[in-house]
Amino acid sequence: MQEPYPRPHTADRIAFVVVLLTQALIGWFLWTDFRRKVSPAVFRGVAALLIVLWIVTFGGVLLSGDGVLYQSHAVSSYIRGVWIAIANLWSIPAAAAVLLYAACRFIASRKPVIRTTEHDPNRRAVLRAAGTAAVAAPFAVAGFGAIVERTRFQVREIDFPIRGLHRDMDGFRIAQLSDLHVSPYLSVAEAGRAVDMANELKPHLALVTGDLISGVGDPLDGAIAQIARLRADAGVLGCLGNHEIYAECEDYATEESAKRGISFLRSEARVVRWGSASLNIAGVDYQAFGWKNGNYLRNAEKLVAPGMPNLLLSHNPDVFPVAVAKGYDAMVGGHTHGGQVTMEILKQDLNFARFFTRYVLGLYRMNGASCYVTGGIGTIGMPVRIGVPPEITLLRLRSV
Image (tube, rainbow, N blue to C red; front, side, top):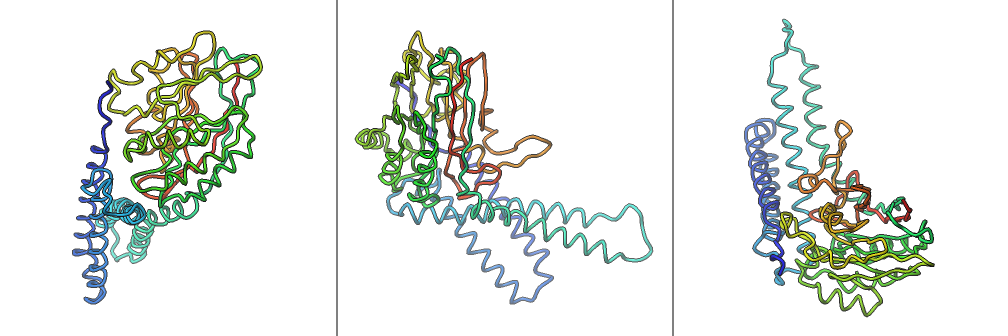
């Protein structure tokens, strides 16, 4: 037996502590700095708005992954999703903004190295302008990520090397969709647009690598109806993600998808034949990060077929080294959303996903085997993408 699937805990608690501290800092700055610069009426209005935002933020915590109302049927999926989105769209940019404000405040409080006999109003004006821009920037970026980047679907074409691939499959096209997260953050119609773009690629095979929805009450039937429109010569295969587990809909998603011709492989394998070539495709349910020490891909070696290349479908890409050790030649996954919010600093992509895995986005190679991690389609936590546009992937198989 596998160990139980862990629910979201540690990351949510760390985020809650960060939000609590930064919101407290906002309140302190409001009292010590802002109160002296405005009229009492303006101060009371801003303070009242901040209290409302604090209530929204606290409610978002109760409704999110580690909250007491998580998976509750007392609150509809739509209300829960919108509430959490508003809470995160305030609290996360606000955390960045208040830290930037604190830095500008500290710099402004320092005396200049070169003393002048007269007060320099230009210096203070520049610092005030810089502080205002620093506070506004995180909210502007979040707004752009929510309004523009979130649904700016792009096709990403990748040459995907697979050792031992028969020449008849060289150039074989696979369309991959992952992490749709059909929910208040991504409508059924928007998911359908991603399916349409995948169909325009005329793939030989289509893969769906988990997280059709985000939580209980999301339109799972609508998501299944959309992926059922995928058209590929060799059919549609897939694996399940962690959010099917959290929503406790693994069996339902599997059965309803099968009725529509989609095979979610749950510790199963299928052989795809193309001309004289054969490719064994195995799939596993979500492999939780907590299983890393000894429990990844338990018994998955039994799905490896001799005499042909073996491709593994795993929502969690962190299992790649274990898959290689168990005899797989290639793997595809998702889960990370490519970081969802990524900033490039000193030529390094920085995002929260890097705290959990080195396999965040793109093509990885190990001992002759290949792994591709897609950036996926949807979002989680807040409806924002920055630096990682939603991705429909076209994998073009290449023999090596």
